[in-house]
Length: 85
Image (tube, rainbow, N blue to C red):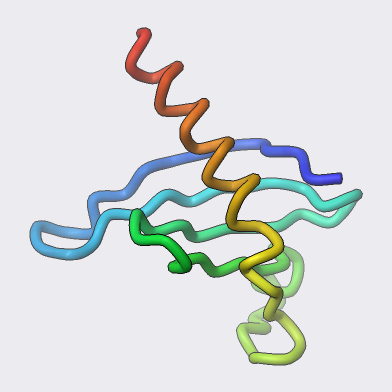
């Protein structure tokens, strides 16, 4: 079960494509999602493996399509709360 812990929006400089960073857990595993505005532009990593320097495909790579919908839903809910404050 995925549980969102924290969301932040990044401008990505002046001309870069903005994105959201989502810290979440999958079961007890801490994860990190990078979600760009365009559909199908999502990356997901295991935070423990990142901490240990592992960015390799095959060991710290996940099927983003399994995470895209719940991550985008969480971001939309977070954005609504941000607008309300």
